[in-house]
Length: 317
Length: 280
Ligand SMILES: [Zn+2]
Ligand SMILES: [Zn+2]
Image (tube, rainbow over all chains, first blue to last red; front, top):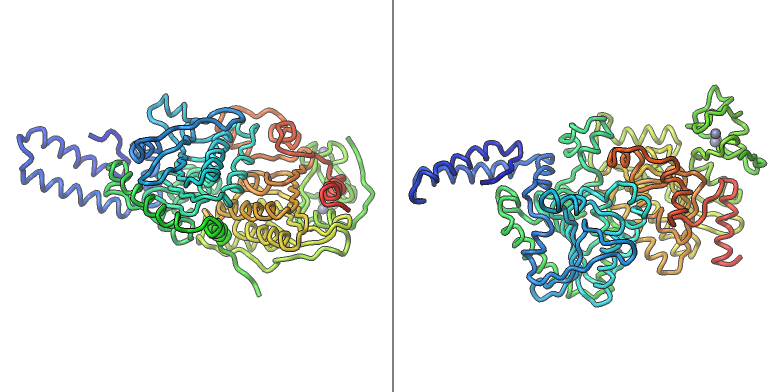
C-alpha cells in the first residue's frame, strides 16, 4: 500500500484500496472482477497523469515518495565511491559527489540530495546546499576535467539555502563561480533534472552540454509559492503562479532550456522508481555515446553557444 | 560624516527621487531634510548620515565618464513577452510603464567612453526600472557589452543595482545568469580586466552571476549586497538579522569585496585600479 497520496490522486487512492481489499479475500489472481478493476485503475492513472496542471506537476515533482538522488546513486551504479568536502570549509551533505561507472563510462557524479526520513532530511538540509556544497561540486568537476571523465549531475533542490551562514560564506559567489567555470569546463557534462530545479541553486550544477528533464520535474527561476507571495501577497495562489511561470518540461523544451523530456512510467516516478531510473540510465548512456564523439573544443564552443542563445528580446529598427 | 563635493558635473534630474515639492529631499535613512540642490551636488549622498541613495543610470554615467566621451550601445533592444505573463497587469504593460517612468529601454544602459582618460566598456543598471531586475534584455545587453570589451580589448566596468531575476520572464531570466557568466569567462581567458561595482541594492541572480565575478570588486559604502534578500532570510531562520548584515562592509570583512568606497571616490578608485593593472 502506498502511504502518501496527493489531493488529486484521491480517486486513484480509493481504487487502489478497493483492489487491495479485494485481493485479501481472493485465493488466486484469476478474478474477472480484479482484472476489470486493475484495468480501470490503469486508465484512471493514465488519464489523470496525462492531464496534470503545472501546479499538480509541481506537487508530483516534490512527492515524498519520488526517487531522489540517493536512489539514482544506488540503482544506476554498483560502484559509487563518494568523495567529500570543498577543501576549504566543510563537507556539505546537501550535495553528494563521487566516482562511478555507468556502462563503459567512468564518470564524476554530482547530485543534490533531499534525504530520506526526518533525521537524514535534516542532515541533508532538505537538499538546499550551502556555498561549500557548490564549491565541492566544482572541485569534483575540476577533477573530472583534469582526468578526462564525463560529469553527470542530478538536479533536485528547492534552491540554494537562504540563511545567514550562506551569506557569510558567499552563496552568490559560489553559484557565480560554478556558472563561470562550468561554461568552459573541458569535459562532457550532462545535467538531469529529476525533481525540483530551484533557481540559481539548480543552475549552479546545470550548465551542461545536455540538459535532460523528467516528465514531471519542474525547473524555475522562483517557486510558485514565492512567486505568488510576491505578486499577490498570497502564497496560496501557487497554482496560478505555476501556470504563469511555464516551469514544466514541455515549456522548457520549447524555450531551448532543456534538450529532452524523459517520460515517466504511468502514474509518475513515485509509482515505479526502478523503471524511472532505468529510463534515465538509457538516456544518459545514449547522450554519453554522442558526446564523447565530439572533440572537446567543439563541445565547449557548442556549450557556450547554447547558453549564449537563451533569452527572447525584441530588436527595434 | 558630512562632506560636500564641488559640483563637477551637471547632473540630470532624477525622474523618480522622492522629492517634496521639488525643493527638499528627505534622506531615506536618517530622515534629514536636504535642500535639493545640495542633494544633487552631493550625488545623492546624505551629508548627515552618509547614506548613498540610488542614482539613475545616466546620472551614474555622468558621474563616471569624462564629459562628451560616452557612446551608448545596443539601445535598440527591448523586452519581449516570451511567457505571455499576466499577474493582473500584463508584463508588456509593466515594461511600457517602466519605460515612461524612467525614460530607459530596460534596466541597463550599455556603452563605452573614457574614465579619466581610459577607454572602458560600461554597463550601468538602473534600479528604477522594475527593480533593476534581470530579464532577457539585461542579460543580452550585458553579454553584448562583455563581447564588445573582449573584441576591443577594453577594461569592463559593470555597475550593479538589482533586486534579482525578472520572474515575469521565468526560466529565461534564470538563464541570463549562465549567459553573462559564460561571456565573462571568455573575456577573462582573453586577459580582460573586469571591475564590478556593487551599489545599493545588489541581490539575487545578479549577485549569483556577474556581480561576484569581478577581477576587482568595488562596493559603495553601506550598500546592501546579498544572494537572498534580508526578508527571505528572516522568514527562513525566523529571527531578525543583526544591523549591518549584508552591507558592503560586511562583505569586505568576509572576503567577498575588495574595496569599499564613498561615492565621491568611486571614479578615481576605478581609474587607479585600471592604471595599476593596465598601465596609464
Ligand atoms: Zn538626481
Ligand atoms: Zn541621512
